[in-house]
Image (cartoon, rainbow, N blue to C red; front, side, top):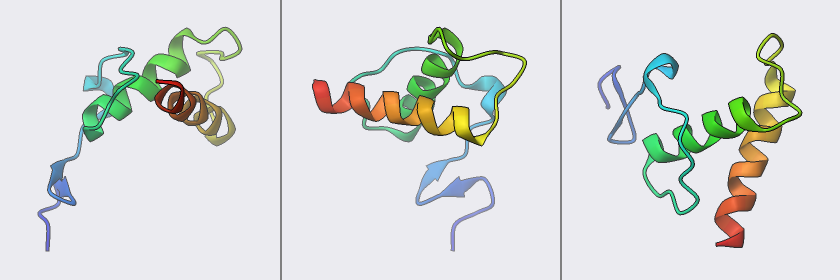
Length: 70
């Protein structure tokens, strides 16, 4: 069984420490998280004051869309 700080062999990253960078060809979990955070911060229809599961869903969808386009 994985240690509490790891999931599927990958370390769990604290959201505050994940940079908001675009990684359209991301394969590592940290890059995927950074790409989702990038979309949640820099997409024009997101508000920093209201980030709920629906907004997380759309940020994830945009990240997946970027991966499919590339």
